[in-house]
Length: 89
Image (cartoon, rainbow, N blue to C red; front, side):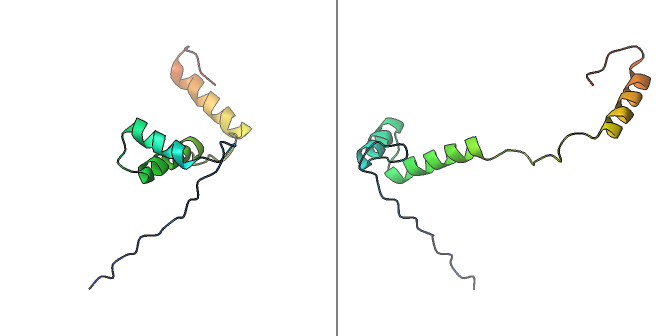
């Protein structure tokens, strides 16, 4: 029989002022009403998801600049295949 998984909890204390990273409980309640959420946890999850989407890349990091030898190879092949057209490289 599979073992049930436990939810992990995160304690979040509300701030007492509107300093840079402090958010009062009243602000969270106001956001809940404005956004139409049924509880304050949804406000926190929404805020964290928005932060995740703005900070976390949506693609794998590249391996840096294209080496000069590879660029020369690409340019040579593009010139052969474009028949007088232009290249973006």
